[in-house]
Length: 131
Figure 1 (tube, rainbow, N blue to C red):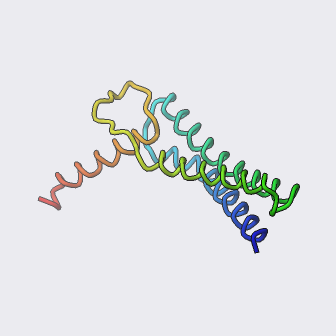
Figure 2 (cartoon, rainbow, N blue to C red):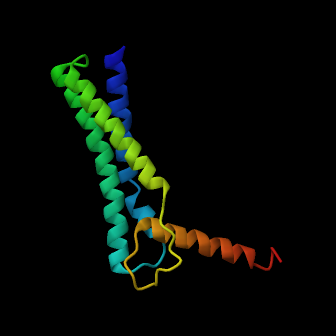
């Protein structure tokens, strides 16, 4: 049972990474008109996260297959990968607020996303349909 759960978890994380990589171009274009540096930063962050997910899934699967799911090293690798996934989730949950950033700065994808959300929210509040 433990082996099956390790392989299912490894496969799910790998597929999650692949699913994260596939729409990269659409995600980046969804941010609208950006400077070249901001476009590169968003692309880099998106690819890095997807490749990290793929790597974590492959690592757990290879270790479980190579030395066995009952081995202490397999447990250590699986726990380390789970901790990394937890850290990635925490980091992804707390975007920095972009209120003080100027349009000429190189912004993180989270800052740009927050700025776009704030702009859309303010635009909706001032639209004639809402007044």
